[in-house]
View 1 (cartoon, rainbow, N blue to C red):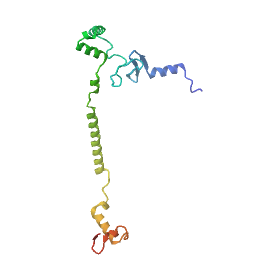
View 2: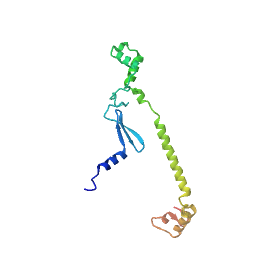
View 3: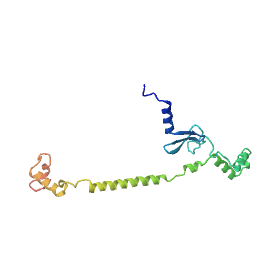
View 4: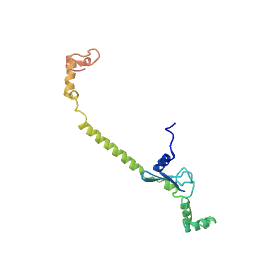
Length: 177
């Protein structure tokens, strides 16, 4: 029980060395270890362009300019009086991208494929380097001359003459059956 007992001075010392949390409306800023990091407050409505979320929690533009405010007032009237550019401007106040812009291909597949080919090539170079500098040379028993001498020796010894290796050799003609 003595180990769990901390004095007030010790607790204050630990807290002062760890970091200071400063709360703001946009998030939480933690100052510790010489750097400041910002964490997003997930309890407030967020804006995100996603195909599966047609209506985000909040509009894209939070702070409106004077022109945007007058356009929002004009929006409350009949929409027939709005021009195409004004309707587009109203859309851009609410949303950052259209569905067509979100579905547009990004070309990221080229980067991914390039990275894959780079690492495959690098791996090939490592394997080639290992083949020349790390692995020992092939044993002489894998040479064609050695294997031919081994076959001749097995035939001379008449290895497995009933159904095996020597059964397929014609000893009178000196060739394979």
